[in-house]
Every structure is written in structure tokens, then in C-alpha cells.
Image 1 (cartoon, one colour):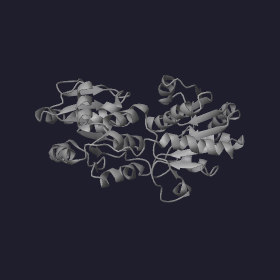
Image 2: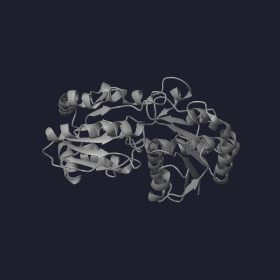
Image 3: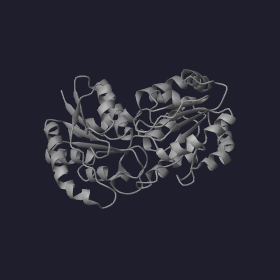
Image 4: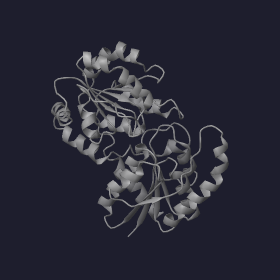
Length: 358
């Protein structure tokens, strides 16, 4: 019986792929122990227990992008976090990391304890935590090609899909048109009118929310239905007419299938799930970071399944001017999704099995 520790917390972009791998590990090794690492402030506090996996909380090591007084606290917090990780990792047979602030101390603890490390990088531009971890291991996997650095030679595994998205693809393959129509109805919308689904990432986006709320009258005038995920930390607008606001979309597979147009950020998980089930998207990449969200969406743009604009360009005036052309492009996009990532979790499980034998 083996013990595998999974490190990926904070946002759904780090947690959902880890959960997908955990579920696949259970299928392959039902008697093994799986333990997640996380912090008290991340979405893992709800998503991991809901998936029936144990969660070990560690001190959060947060590094601001710009120099600040908080940097002086990093050494002490990092040491405390590594020590907390070691309590679990010293008894583990492998650590599988997915990036984010939970992963860095986990990689250090695994290195100090001589535990094999496997890393999955979702973005085309690896983050600092995974770049750090890559100095400790050669067992690397990526969701999409990385042009430079150690991840450029990593296993191209794809991005592990949530079970509902993977199952949604399998069911929709039989009849994509029927699947999209039925998904609209399950979400409580008419199958006879266009539906736009707005998603600003797992935390929501204030910038996107403001533009959408300013465009409600336009949507109503044109008879367009809207499902707007505003984020759990943001105020929930009133749902009026064909406009429905929710804090978080639980039935994501149905949302992707039902949407004639998706408007949102282009995080790696969003792009992967959209590639599997979506039809056409307007992506507004997060304006901070290392530009990875622009790169994440590039292949979808090349496949004529998305348009990408900057947050500065994304205004109510842009929506008014471009709404008709966006919906027209959506009708011309392929009705079918793409199952390229269906077996990503299996590939990462296999890589971890290999690492444990070395």
C-alpha cells in the first residue's frame, strides 16, 4: 500500500487537475492512501473534502509580484510550511505537484526527505513554483508544449479533466447538437434563444462583471440569455428576465455545452474544459502574471473557436459593437468538442508509477 501526496491549492486551476489525477489513481490503486496539501484560504478547503480526500493544511507562503515589506516574512513562513509538509511527506512514496503556492514547500520537503517528485504544468509558461520543483526532478509533464527550459522536454500529457467534463464529452459525442440543446434546458434556459455564459475564473472577475452588468439592457433588447458566474466573493446581482446571476456554476459541463458563446478568462483549466465541450469563446486574459493566459488561448484562436482581446479593450462599447459578429462566428464554429485531454490523468498516473520505481 503506497501513500501519494498531491500538492495543488489556491484556485480551481491547480485543484481540479489534482483531483482528476487522484480519482484516476483510486481506479488504478484502490488500496493506496492519497493526501492533499492546502491552506486554509484556498478553494481546496471545500473542493477536496467534497471529493472525499483528506486535506492537510500548511502555512501559506505568499510572494507578492513586486518587492514589499511582506518579503521579510517569507523565510520564516517558508520554513514553517516546509516543516508542516514534511510531517506528511516523510511517510509518502511520491509527491505530485500542480503548481501554485502550496507546491513550492511540498517540493522542498520532498527533496529533503528523498521522496520522488512528479510535476504537472498546466500553462505554456511555467510558474515559479514548478520551475523551482523542476530543479529537483526529471519527472515532468505538461498540458501543452513549452518552448524553453526544462519543461520543453517534458511528457506532453494534456490537462486532466474533471469527471463531469470528461463524461460530458463521452455522452455528447453521440449527438453534439442534441447534447447542447438538452444542456440549455437542464440549466433552465430556452433552447430557441442564444445563451452567453460568463465566467471570470473560480474567484470571479470584478472587471468582467462590471462590463456584463453594463450590457444587460443590450442582451435583453436582443433576446439573448445570459448565465453569469460572478464569483463567490462578489456581490450577486438580481436575476431578471433572461439574465441569471450565480456565485459559482456547479454544472460546468452543462454550461460549456449550452453556451453559444463563452466570455471569460483563459486560464489553463478553462481553456482545456472549453476545448473539450465548448463551441466559441471571447477570452479576456488576466492582465497580471507572465502572459500565460494569452498563450493558453492561442490554439483555440488558431482553430477558429475563440477570439482574444485585452482587458483594456473589453468594455460595454466593445460588447455593443461586436456582439453580432461574435454570435455569427459562434454559429460557424464546429459543433463538436475535442477530446485531446481525455486521457491526461491516466498519463500522469503512469508517470508517477514510473517515478516510484526509480
